[in-house]
Image (cartoon, rainbow, N blue to C red; front, side):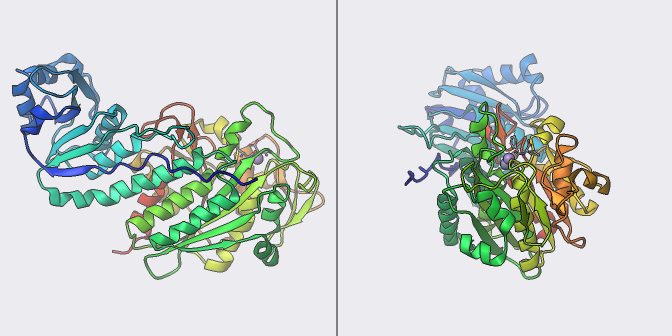
Length: 494
Ligand code: BES
Ligand code: MN
Ligand code: ZN
């Protein structure tokens, strides 16, 4: 029964910032990274490397291979003559590069980082977006290895003005928060339980967040019976964790996350093949918690409350049955058609609780809610459902800005008949047709008409089988960057 506590995974990137010193180009023994573009004169570091290598850099930059690179792409010269380095990486980056190009450059570097120490010769290159991308790409989950090894050597950044290093702190802190989300999603369900997750959230008080953990007695007293029904077949006690970052006055933005620690499907049990992936069914909660850490770390001037419903969906003698009817916190009676449609039952109560208690300015929920969203959008884009065009458009813009795929999906009263119940008020499943939309329609019942709301179905993007732009395969942390950008743009003062 007692479980090992989660091991710390690879820590976030913490580069050393040093002033520009061209002599290090010759003596550095690991990887050296320089920037150049064919149309610009060679920057200082590239010029020095060119001299040391007797023109290899200018030949590379003039080559057809270099010309064929996307902006931010790179070529690597191994064991370059005239240098101590084992690799010289030339990143194609022009002057006044756009943020997306700086991120692409960071991804090239992050992908290539190794155990050898890296020296990034940045000079006057703008660093926050670039270094954030390095950190996002340079992630590996080692917490479950018997002998976890540091995968990446130290990173040193040479820059013209080390006073500017402070500008990178927020960007790196947000990358660290994405790493936290990935660690949580990657963690197995015997390690990360409702209890150990809640304990970890409790520890975040040290960051200046106000944390409250409601236990089963609290939840029963309050009437969150739909949430409790999902967890009643598990030995792990159901919980609701609330994290509050009050960096401004006024009504808060509420972020709500689905935290199903493991989803067996319950009595409507899932097939064995691939069930192990259901350790990621707390992905919405993980993004919520990562986002709250990001806001606290960068001392955001915003009022944001994160609420995560933590449950485990197990088949058991006490588990809920198909056909059960449960009373939600709102009062609507839910007919349980399929115990595998559990996420929406958890969210129904947490969404209502969030609105009732905090009267939020807006509500955004995140959930690995439906397999159907994977059929619709695959693994590149999350489904965006909203009752408010302005809020939805602001989110789509923020997601696009940070390179997170997102696509608006429809809502509509016409879908309600698929989930109308003969004996109760609503069914928890409408079957296969429009499976992601009926799930969103179900959630919308628990949103007050005046509350601007977005539901993000992240089932396809939370965990990927192949590398994505800024994440190696596995947990992606999708959503932390986009929501942080949305909060900066729309919910932050001054
Ligand atoms: N957690 C699953 C959705 C899911 C599927 C997430 C695949 C990630 C990858 C959710 O609880 C679920 O089981 N949904 C059912 C709903 C159905 C029973 C109406 C589904 O999508 O099949
Ligand atoms: Mn399920
Ligand atoms: Zn689920």
